Every structure is written in structure tokens, then in C-alpha cells.
Image (tube, rainbow, N blue to C red; front, side, top):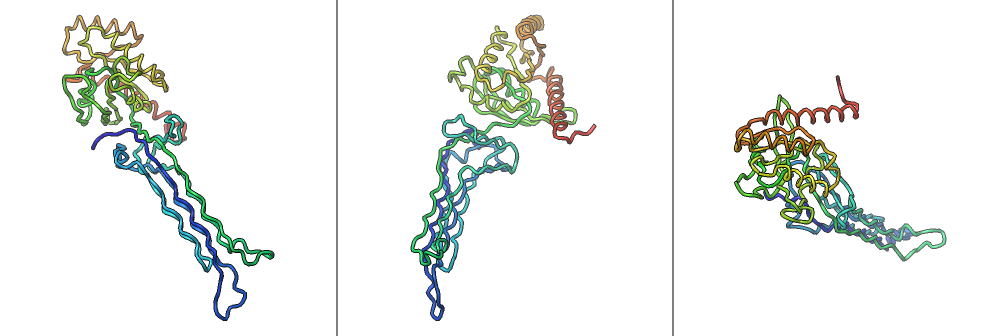
Length: 342
């Protein structure tokens, strides 16, 4: 299935049905009078979060969604049926934005969450509603109210505990494949990964989800390469694992490039905890590796771990550090919700 993380769609709620103008005329029944029923309400447009979806690909082939129109009222005080609702099914982590792409309408993070985006028009009153002591034979009824329409953006942001960031060919896909059952595309050229991948990692009897984000390059904030549209998928991550290719000459420059692009993206990514690691350490001499580790640690002010996604060296320690942070986060959430148990 092709991955699609954003889509622009047109929605329109249903029009309300018109009220009916009718009079009761039956043989041997005196004092008939108006008996026109009300029109039914138009259907709503609803976005619902469902299980079993991991992409917005369905909205690439259909962009227009309209709810049903309410049925007109009928004689004998019969009210028209309401129009059927239109339900848009989306995966977990989908955000809904207005047409400007900036105004957030809703954020669906759990199965079953739903939002009414456009309310259907009300049905019109039949002439029975207007009967009174002055006007006992009203010959008018209300038309149904029109539905609402709008263009909206659907944007999916993967829900993962940890996010992998780094320049293209930093070994992110190899790392993900080595620690989980995910099978991302792996090759010896840049931009192998063209869309995010998720993997479930099992460590010490616990599990957490890690997301592999397509590589950033210098100028991504201005649209270079793949841009940084995929950085939205790490907004929900609690921790970032920043992989730097140890086989490159300027590891400090590579690290600074990614940090600058993350800072340009904003949205709180610079405040997230970061684990910094030199990857592909099996490809260079140990003395040179120590020099690069020292230089990167001095520039970043952080401890730099040495790992190799291909051989597995140092990977367990990195996963343990991620698990520790994720566990602390989960314990804090449980404590705030009142479900924490010592």
C-alpha cells in the first residue's frame, strides 16, 4: 500500500428538506385544517478515527464528500427522514486543518475519536407549524436550510515513542531493520527512504515504537531534497535518536546541519530529548573514531554513543536508554491520570 500522509478534500453537509403545505381533506371529517409535516435534517460530515488504517491513500482517488439531503415533509403531519451522514475514516494520529493549512480543527489520537466537521441543514417547518387563532389556514412553509461546505486538509502524524533523524545514508533504515521486524528499503545511495517507516522494538520484556524519518539535507526548510514535511511525524515522539555517519569527514558539520533544519521547523522539536550516536563505526579505525567522538561530544555538549546498525555493536545500550526515557514518560502520564500504581 502506498504511503500518503496528507490530503486535501472537499466536504459538504446535506441540505435540509422543505416543509410541506398540505390540508386534511377527508369525507365526513369536519374541521380539517393544515397538516403539512416538517422536512428532515441534512446529514452531517463526520471524521472518525478507526483501526486498521495507516495511510490516507483513500483520499487520493476521491476528494469530494457530500452527506445526504433531508427528505421533504409530507401531508398527515409526516416528518421527512433525516439525510444519511457522511463518515470519513482516518488512521490514528490524523490532524484536521482548515483550508489555510494552519488553523487546527481537530486532532484524532485514539480509536473511536470523531469530529463533526459540517452540520447538516435543518429541515423546514410545514404549514401545520404556522396554524394559530388568527391564521387558521396557513398556506406557506419553510424551505430547508442549506448545508455547509469547505475544503479541509487531512494530515497524518505517526504516533511513535522514538524518532530516527539524520542525513541521508546515515544508516537509519539499517538500524530500524536490525532492531525490529520492519523491512525498509536499504541501499548504498542517498534518499533510499522516501516515506516514514515504523518498527516495534522489544527490549527487556518491554516494547516501544520507533519511526524512521526520511533523511534531511541542508536547505530542507526551503524545500531542498524531500523538504521537511516528514518531520511532522516526529512531533509526537518523546525522544529523538540522531544518527551521524561516522565514515564522513565532518561529523560535527553533519550534526549541525540536522539541528539547524530542526530549529527552522520549530514546533517544539528542539526541546525534545536527543540521543546522539555515531553510526557505521565498523567502517573506520578505532583511533580516528575516538577523535570524531570527542569532537562531536565537545560541539554538542552531549555524550556520543558508538554503534553499528549492521553488526549490532552498541545497539543494546542505545535501546536501553530509549526505553528508560519512554518508561519514565509513561509512568508520569499514568500518575497524572490517577492510574499509577506503586
